[in-house]
Image: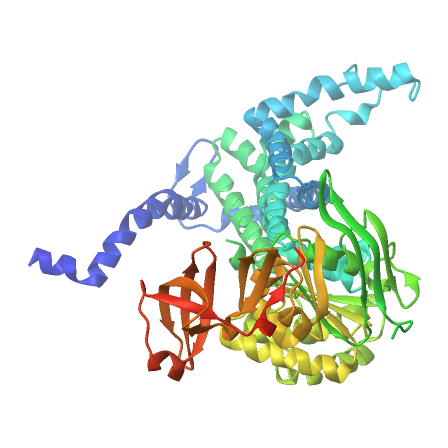
Length: 288
Length: 324
């Protein structure tokens, strides 16, 4: 009887899919469901109680702080996206089309990944002595006579936050773009030249359209990472700037879990909407 | 007869570091002819083609088309167009946009370039597929599109880099007939690189056989086949036996060899029935392998088996002395 059941290919199929389903249910679906549930709970100064209240969302959407912080989050995401795209595309283009030898290509590519052998936090913090009021950057600029006074906006500003973001996440743009570019048949570039396309025209009409899936994957990486980040913003702005991640982490620090959960749900929906919009434009399925 | 529209290679040389891919080539391609560059892989035929196209820099020498040295010009300004081995169609553009690509690069407006592309698609009989993407086409269809894209620039010389090698044998024979027909209709020079001698014989007005970076022999297809200059050409073009005779080597065509009562003694090593004829492979006492293509009736009149001793004969007039 049991053997018969195993021979049934529907049963067998479900069994084979079961481990991954369980992992996803336990570690992805269940936590999200819990966050959604908790976001409807009530809270007083000293307690949290199960309930079904819209209070948390009411408060969130009625507070001007929410809009300001979401706006700041989008701003960080957009500026970081634009910069990582510009740098990432250029680096990937150089690696894929200008470096002829495969060995050098791989060597240079590994070189790009070396910073990732250290932790995020260390890479972030190492900017602080460089950018500080009496840091290397300011001292060097003063000794060259470029400036008389130390630049105040170098550290603990939007500038330093975005600098750290770009530093941390450019590789997430380089890798998928490089990957798609390497799949472009080199004879297409010759064909474009044969058809009278200039270097710029080849870039615009052949390389960029064929690289969009890679650009899109990199965009999703960078946008989701930046929108979900809170530690970079905290360290690099010296706690003077806020994004949605920091809003959540502050609520958690104050043990306001329902409010934190509501903010998290709104952030999750926002990110999903952004990705849905991106996917409307480009079909990335064949890249996966 | 020389005209101003000929394509001429003058002392054309290509070096990659210390290796010489093409050595001091001198040749005139007559306008409106179908020329096949024939040779084994690595003989320099593709490098030669790519230099004419402008995708490979010329190390030394000149390429003269229409009275001008084009060797320093950009590919699109040369009056040549290339059809790539894998067709190199732009995968993100429709068939029509692929064909119209060069016009778009020149800034021709959409209506004009689409009209022109449609004309070319009609020429290669692909009108029905104009809105498809290249991935939705078969190999033969992709090739027609590639052909249309190359011809839309109105080249004086069309360069084809092993255009038939990606197709299956049946389609290959059909496409080569179409290539030939198209060339005759358009009246422009086609330079076709191939390593298949049957392809070259079927298509070419002129065959240029290359080996080791130089031209071994060039001439009308029939002349090259009937009177190969060197042992290499005789062996590469096929259908020939190279025999060592006192005073040098000579060739005799396989279909000119007969089994007779007197002649060169040899032993049969293999017999292959091929329908209309029977291929009898023999080995002479000197160690040369000689193939005799015998008409079917003649062979079965007195059949032979491997191991039999035979004597090979041919008319003295069919023996062709080799220069090298």
